[in-house]
Image (cartoon, rainbow, N blue to C red; front, side):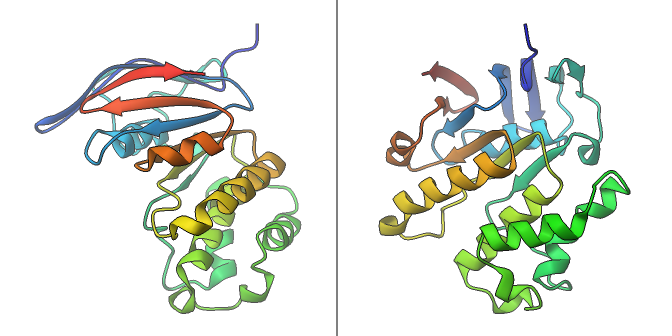
Length: 218
């Protein structure tokens, strides 16, 4: 049996008065998972545990049978698009996309080709030399996604990726995003506050209430 791409076992996190308790989640290769829940329910905190930004209180996190619980973030082979995109203001568009290559040293083969392909797929090739301050919200989103995918991650995590996008555009953007990830990475975990959006995707949803993930459904 193939090991899950991501396997979370009895994860607990304490952050002051906030906590996540006994979180269990298994994600197989090629699956899409959506974290659903209100603001403050712990969706972003769980993502940061998976990424290694938060050190969990106890429990285990595995990726393909490898224990990554104490692995530093840059060695977890995960792409991340934060809610505010967190683009680096001192770098232009191409510099932002290439940023992750530094952590990978020489493990990325033909980085120029990767950048060219992502710029083409995401239709940002004309923006490569532009300062990120001069980008629209949608353009920033595409650059942040390109940066996350450039390192050829095993898992992609997106934190409310369409929070700044108007309702009429979300349906088409979901379809487009899924197509892009299908061609560049295998697994995706994203978190939403808008529950109706999840029905436009094929995958499993994990609904979060305060402090707990309470339901996992097909």
